[in-house]
Each structure stands twice: as structure tokens, then as C-alpha cells.
Length: 474
Figure 1 (cartoon, rainbow, N blue to C red):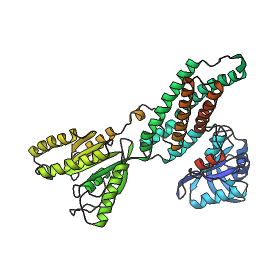
Figure 2: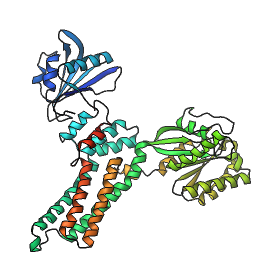
Figure 3: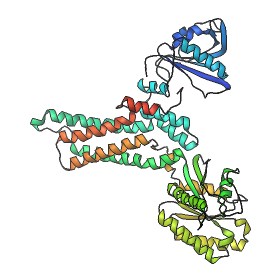
Figure 4: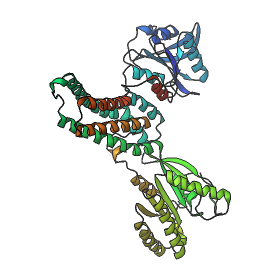
């Protein structure tokens, strides 16, 4: 794409609305828009200072297309760093297209996906990780993903990387300097100080790499698998959590034969609930496929909710033993997954039966690592709010509450892994007393991977892949 011409695009969602914003950016933005804009004040738009708004009409010759507000942003004090004009017009799709087509006829080009933000990056208005955070911010659907995107867009992540890169670059310069005086055997880079720096870099990189596991699930929604035998109330629980009739509820065992998924926000964190087919022995081919999918969903879930029918296990020892065996199977196969055992249909129990049931579930959960239990009635909503609180407790949101840097981008994660690999090589070289020229090779590689994150080192293919995921107009 040409980056020295003037581009135009609709910056608000397409379709009818109260208003729409058309963004024009490039060296000729004001020169193209000004002759088409007749201000109510009769002041020429090209003479107006930056960050001012003007009421007037967009004119196609003698024809008035619409009454608009024209916002002027002069370079370099604009989002893109270029001359920019934004026209706020009425939200008719017809008006939007009439204005955009007029601007194209007068010399603008239709913007490519993400081209405004690409220009902001190329004009040093933001680094590459901040530019990527813009897309995450647009796509954020809950408080957690919004907070992570804002933290990254403000430069929290890139600031940490930039500090590490600067310190490493200083030592790299000293080691390169040593190579110029190799015959005189001088040491400009203090090796003990360098070891301390390498250790600090390793600590920060490991923390950022570890944060990706948390960041990825928070960004995409934490998957929670609702499992158990048929007819224990899994679909009723899903409906109670979502507060809508999302899943079919029936007294007939095996009603749910495929997984049903839906999302909701709890405490600002996105959760993706998966209602699975009931686990039981069956000769029904379709139901068997659903049960196989259930175990696949358990493997993908961050938290497993295992439902039992409290009215059955409260009075039936054999049924209680079967539940114990099923829970042991899940824990043996997925030992690290948090498991919440929920005794549903407690509205059918007497008070004495409830207390007796608590003791039995306490015994089961105490023998299964990372397992807890909860009594609940999905039908009457009793305990549903407590379940939401428990789910939040399972999620490691401490870093989020403390506004720590959390990595959510798989490209950043890959670059951090490569940087850590090179830093570990530097540490091995220091311990083996390698010469400066050999150390310099691994240092340069680590600096390269740091630069990939912030965009100090990049290529056209990488930029094309990143900004192709943006919407037109951003």
C-alpha cells in the first residue's frame, strides 16, 4: 500500500445510526476536504488551527449532501501523526457513501484495514505492541480484557521491554568496544554487573511468559465445562447462570447430545460455559459421540464443574460410591484442573439430609486435590450467586488487580520465549568465560527478539499480517 497518499474510510460501524464519522488522513487531507466544506462561519477550513470543530455543509458543487461537524487535527498532533479531518455526518448509509465517494473523486483513496493505526505506528505515535492493543481494545467484551488492552496501549508492556533492551544494549556496546581493543586485553563490561543484569532479565521474561496463560484465558473467556451424569440438571444450571432458556431442559435422560456454549461476564471477567452431554454407559451412537466430546471439552476447560443429583446420593450409598469413582477418574486424567463438585436439586432435601450430604461431599472433595463442593438448586436459583463467586476465586486475577503487565498476544509470547532462550545462552557463555565476540552473537539475537515486540525491528510481511486483522477505518 502507498503510505504517502491521502486515505478515507468510515470510522464508525457501517449501517444506519444517529451519526457516522468519516476519517480522512494524509498530506492533502485539508486541501481535499476544505473546498467541499462550506462553514456556517464562512471561515476557510484550511486556515483553522488544530483540534477545532466547525459546523457547516458538505457540498458537491451546488448540491448540499449533509450538514456536518468537521474536526481538524494538524500534523503531528493527530492519531496518525498526519493532517487529519473527521466529518461527523448523519448516520444514513446513503449520506455516508455519498460523502466518501465524493472524497474519493477529489483525490482520496479508500483506506486498507488498519491503515490509520499503521500510519500512527510508522509516524512513531505508538510502538507496535501498543498498536496491536488498539485491536484488542476494540474487541474487548468484558472489564478484564478491556483493562489488559488499556494497560498495553498505555505502554506498560513495551516500557518494560524497552528498559531491558536499553540496559542490554548498553552492555552490548561495551562488549563490542572490547573487540576493538582485543589485542590490549581490556574489559569495559564488568562481568559481575552483566551477570546481575542477565539474572534480572531472566526473571522479568519468565514472569511475562508465565502471565500469558492467565492473559490468554482472560482475553478469550475462561472455559468452564459443566459435566455429570444425564438428568442431574446441567442444562438447568446453564440456563440459571445465563438467566435465559439457552439449553433444552427435559426429564428424559440424554437430551443434550452435543455441547452447548455461551458466555457471560462475572465480576468483570469473561466466562465461557460449556454444557456437555451426560456421562453414562450407552449404546446410542449419537449420544456416545456427545460423551466423547464431553471429555474433549474437559481437557480444554480451565475449570470443571461436576454436577450430581443430591436427592439420589443423599439416600443411595451405591450412587454415592459411583460419584466418587467418576470424580477420581476426572482427577486422575486432569489432576491440575480445579474441580467444583455441585450437589444440585437440594430443594428436594430435608434439613437433616442437607447436613448429612455436606459431610459426604466434604469427604469426597478432601480426597481429590484442588476439588471443592457446593450445594445448589439450579431450579430455584439457590446457591447460583455463590457459584459465581467460587468461579472467580479459581481464576488468578491477582496480577489484574495489581495492574501488573499481562501478556495476551501470541506473537509477543513467541518473541519472549526466543529472547529468553538467547539470554540463557548469554548466561551459559558468561559462566564458561567465553570471549566477547561469542557473547555478542547471542546478545544481538536477544536484542533482535526484544525489537520484534515493540516494532524497532520489523518487515512488511509482519506488518501486513498484524494490521490485516484490524477493521477498516481504524
